[in-house]
Image 1 (cartoon, helix red, strand yellow):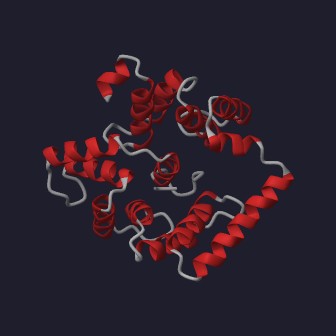
Image 2 (image 1 turned 180 degrees about the vertical axis):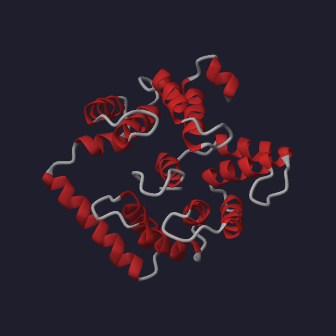
Length: 242
């Protein structure tokens, strides 16, 4: 999609921007990633939302709440549901979101893997609760042990970057590969990067890496990409894989 990006294709510009923001398949250059997002953010809802998060968290740009809000508004106007929810966060809707988290927590205690994953996302992002990376990682693990692909990938990323747990690259690779085998797109991209570089003990295999990137291109989940981006940032920075 790099060639398509340089020809002005909006979706390709968005994907290339996210690659630079995440350091997957491209050098980790968040400022460059932001530049690509800006080129397509007025037409690609996901790009506008990602750009808003960059300004909100200070990724690739200086933090600027007003500019972040402007991009959330742009994303909402062109149909991004997540941005619409951000802008409509009145006290009543906030109360409703807290109630939703409580329901996820109740289901998680009963062993529901999807609920465990959603609770983990809330903890990792500090959404309607205090941010707690350790609790998030534990909950990702609970869901991952039940075969939840997004949680498997998220737990692998936690291990790779030492987020909420000790750094363990060997186990990280195992979980990321398992998530890729289960069809998770972020895991496809992560594993492709390792295969291209022969990194973290993974044997170099460019053909397999290319095949994984093709799989990843037909897979989209904005929450998952946002989580991968936040997990790759240094611990202590502002921090979902589907």
